[in-house]
Length: 438
Image (tube, rainbow, N blue to C red; front, side, top):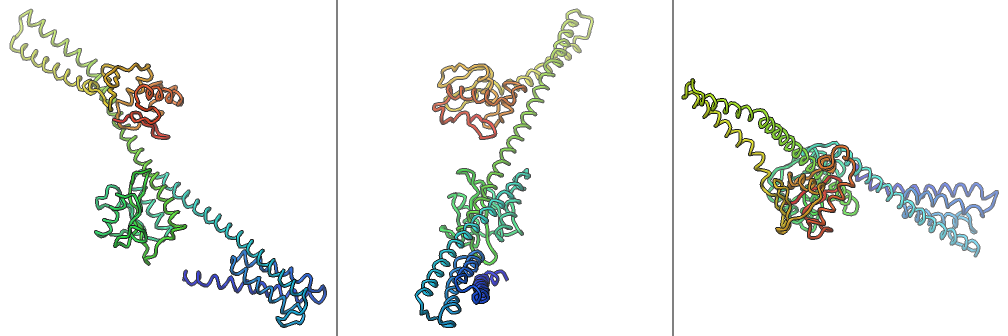
């Protein structure tokens, strides 16, 4: 049904162009006996413009030719023939044809510009709609399901999202589950390794009915989108593939955002666990240890004074000493982690001794610089948000003063980086925070 309508559409435009010329001719036949032929030629210009706006240049060209022939047949001497005997009539026909052609080309150009603008608006609306849907997604599976369903809906195709690295798992499928064969998985692996599209309809052709396109964030391939139509047709490389790449960019941004949010949640969980552990250790050290020391001292005093069962006192003293050793070993666990220096290249950060060295030489840092570096070193490799760093180093009152953080990071890079303009130790994650590479 769709193909029939698309095939009939140009014919309908041509017929409409001829009908508009016919209406103009009828109007000319009505007014010519009263006002003469001088105003008749102007009646054909609206018909040519209408044909150009509705159907484009082809119907407009037909309308221009039909207008010139109709004017010659009905309004020039001798009437009802295509012969021209008067030079003025011939000039009128030529001018009419020229003006009609120029007008039709101009109107057709305006129509093409309007269609292009409408296409861009529709593409932007599709991209914005997907971006809004992805914003509400909280996990990788939900992001994959939304991305695959949107691609399947927009391009009327089957869509699969395959996570990287490829393990034979399919993260999402739309509009219904599909299976991939060995050749399909080989093509997907090739797309992952090369970062370029593979499969049906591209230069890297392999025997598969699917086309595999990488979902990339920068140079890193996060996933592979597989698409295939039931009729075996390919996407239009001029319009549809560009839109598909734009949609896949939105999916890549959502996947990267989900990954960072997952890391932040994990960091928050670990940080909260460490905080509770530190609080527990502090409580044990402050409350339990003094009590054990007092009990041990009382046992020793009773033993010196005599008058009690020495065997019982010996067992009690041994148990107290054992508990003290267990307690000291438990408390030392928290300090042992801090005693190991954090090393990144030539930079060594010793949190236990509050000492920073570069190539073996001590580096002098301001208190805020050291506080910032220490906070990053406590979670090496993890992204710490701007708000977290400001709150931890400068205090909750300065959580919004991002300038403080930038100045301190600049100072650290000047003192620790080989090339402060291309930092490798303290790396910025745009709009998120910083991490310490180790």
